[in-house]
Length: 311
Image (cartoon, rainbow, N blue to C red):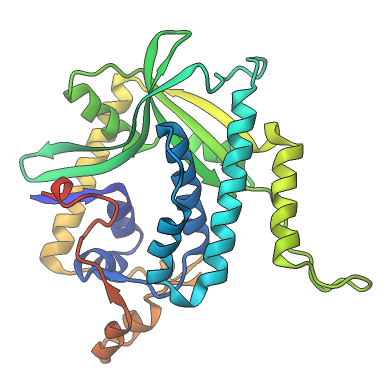
């Protein structure tokens, strides 16, 4: 059976060759993924909040420093910032009075946090994942998925429209329905990143230090929380769920074809967010197989899913 996650599927569609490196060869990039790691850290602190447990900062630091030993300062600062922003987020939603039309933290009761799920597309294909949360809305007495997003996009309306076609949510809801559990839609908790940059090259002032810059980010969230924290409900119709199921089924067919005929490069994906793909060298020099040895290997195909969930 082919078992894939939303991340692995999206990687295959972005660039099949990148999928081969990450999920067939199971190699880890040696470059610290700053934006992705920060998002993971925010998820971690919110997960601890929703579970009502204290975060283990040392454990999450150790997990990343073992992978990226040359990026100790970056990891420490990103963990610090993620914790501060998570606190500001909690503080805001703890005190919302309903005037902005979204439920406060008191209204949403978490029934499940980071629960693994799986959905069989057919007898040969299965998508698996982790849901950020499954919540009960006390006021309207309905159940919803909960998804936390961190985004630095400048086109917020386009981003929110994209969420309306989130096929991962479609399949996640189908998995809940298959378990005979109620679900009416999804609440997206969006943490927008401020569009500010570190101050450098100033004529009369020295360059801004990272300490000053990160504290300025925290102060920005604290002074304008309604601008940067948004809780967005999205309802899902059965027609939308069927559409998402059809999309996923076709994606699996494409991946089956790749497995049979090979994983082509998508050179249009070599440059993303003004950065070269971390597999660029090994991808463009196929006559140098030793290049692949520079990468660490992981033992699981899908790093975020347990061994049991991948069987």
